[in-house]
Image (cartoon, rainbow, N blue to C red; front, top):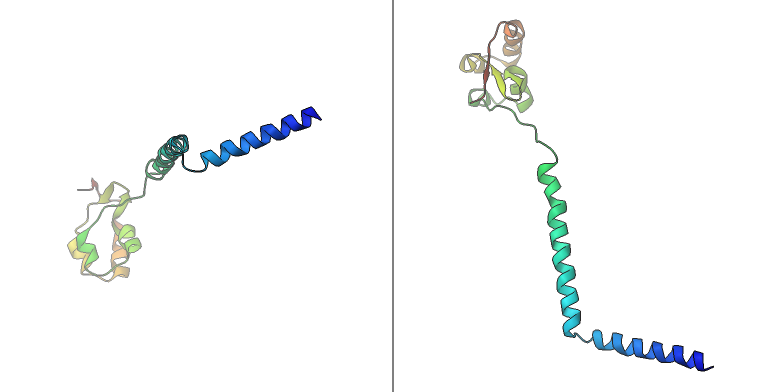
Length: 119
C-alpha cells in the first residue's frame, strides 16, 4: 500500500511539473526554439534536392524560327543536333518556307550539314 501511494505521489509531482512547464516557462521556450531551428535547417536541406538532383533539359533558341509561329517541338526537330549544338542552316530562309517543306529539306540535308555550338 505504501508503494501504491508512492506511485500516486510521483504521478502528482509529474503532473504538477508538466502544468508548470505548460504555462510558458523559459525552459519550454528554449526547447521550442531549438526544435524549430533544427526543423528549419532540415527543411532547407531537403529542399536542396529540388535544385541539385536533376539537370533540366534545355535547347538552343533560334529567334528566326520563332517568327513563323512553329511549336517548340517543331523548332527542335528542324534545328537541334543535341542539347548544345544546332545544325548550321540558314534559318532565315527556312523560316520563309512551310514547316512541311522545311522538314523535308532538313531531312535531305542533315547528313551534309555541319554542327555548331549554341551561342
